[in-house]
Amino acid sequence: MDHFSKVPMVSKEDFDDWKIIMHAHLAAQDDDMWYVITDGPLKILKPNPAIAITEGAPQMLEKPRYEWTSEDKKKANLDNVAKDILYKTLDKNAFSKIKMCHTAKEIWEKLIQICEGNEEKKENKLSVAMQKFENMKMRAGETMNEFYERFSSLINELSALGKDFGNREIALKVMRGLPREWDVKKMAMRASRDLNKLKLHELFSDLKAY
Image (cartoon, rainbow, N blue to C red; front, side, top):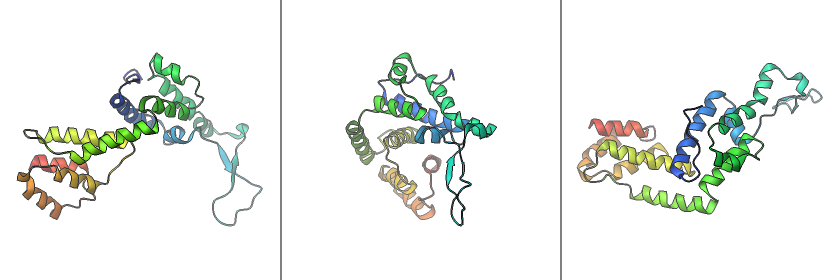
């Protein structure tokens, strides 16, 4: 874990990057690890044998610890694993603010609250980011790579604030942001490509090839 940066308490941009890294890392540890972050510690359940099931899913009840299998124990311990991973990325200042949290979910939510602020602040940040999105255009003298990096960064910022776009909406926005000398290429792409399936990196790959 030494290669993970410590969580900053001031930079929203750095914290957004940290969330992306941690999301990927936690999910890679176990298929259920991310549910520990979003929903809390996993409950080890089993079908209730006292109730006959004629249709639908069986009624579940919590499985006693003495009945746990090795796999059950692994799943039950995922919250401890997640907390350990999160602890190792926190600097002393950050740790002092979350040390009273009991679960990985509580730690995650507390860090978001600290680093991103309250809902009003998040709404303000979203409004500013959306204004940037509406005004996004390729600058004079800007290379396609530079435009791609700037656009991708804004899309990631909006996603972190809870605003996601479909492929078509993103593709059309990129095209609207291109200079008029790109009109022929834009018309050709709209006629030949399914914008609903065209991913951002594929779009810019086509534009850079042109």
